Image (cartoon, helix red, strand yellow):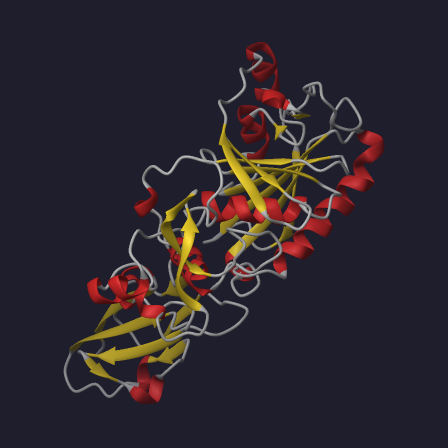
Amino acid sequence: MIYEDVALDGQILSKTVLKDQPEDIERIKKDKATKSAVQVIQGRRTGQHIGVVFVGDGYAQKDFAQYEKDVAHIFKNLSLQEPFKSYLPYFTFYRVDHISSQSGVNKIPSAGLGMYYGCDGLPRLLCVSTTRVMLEARNAPRSDIVFAIANSSEYGGAGYRKPSISTLAARHPAALELALHEVGHSFALLGDEYEDQGSSENCNSYPNISPLNFDEMKKKKQKWHLWQDLKGISSYAGACYSQKYYRPTLDSKMRTLGNTFGEVNLEQFILQIYKKVRPIQFATPEATIKQSGAIEVQPMQPSSHSLTISWYLDGALQPQLKNRTRVETKEIQITKSTHTLTAIVLDNTPLVRDEVAREKYMKQSLKWKLKLR
């Protein structure tokens, strides 16, 4: 578990790695038999998607209207921030309607999700039972990112790496920013971009942290060297809790809350998105077509741009079919009995500059054998 203390101006002061709290085994067994209702806030239940789950603690039956309001507020703010804003259709947001036996969250572990303030002697550390949270979150079809929210306006939060859980006080304005910072760790696998307290081990494993300055990175073609021409991106000393490491921007959400993630970090978010979903949402018909008809390809659809669709007949590009999602076989010039039709879908977003990674994760092809008479 990770706890990051935050100053009033959003500066992250230190990182502390804490041991998970012991579980109440009997209560966990009881919770396993409990089924909570799940509501889709936005997105699809089926097909490819990344599941973002909200589950609350300290919301008794009388607080349910407040819970609905708090989740709607957090979702709205999430959807306005990148990368959620541009790739909103890739995510499905679920609300798990867990009803607590108590109203509010305090310094005593709750009977519901075990949430409480002040664990390990840190007043603003908002701990939770990860086991109980995931038992609730898994009522949703997918639970890739989980926000455990407290019925409270008192500042508090924490981040858990495995599984990916961020805790936050639902009605404190800074808590959502801290949760987003933690998603930067757990989902995009980013490192902290500040030089205060913490462990400096394995810092070079983070895509946004480097022991090399920018000139050395460019020479060795490492880390964020592909972004060298963009204003504001360089190598700034102070990252991964040490002045020995560099970060790509002067400030970002991985250093100070309230900032954007920045281009280098957003690239990592997008690549992680495509490690969970493929560019093609669905296609029909089956791989071999023996009679005339239509071939359909439905790509994933970001909010900010469209994916490109390229069609090839026996390896030759068919420019007249560019970006078509439906192709009739009668439109294709066939000169022999068997042909191969290929559709290639690609996300060409300028937010990614690593073309090797784009080719690997953000490109997908499908082929059909045409055996038309």
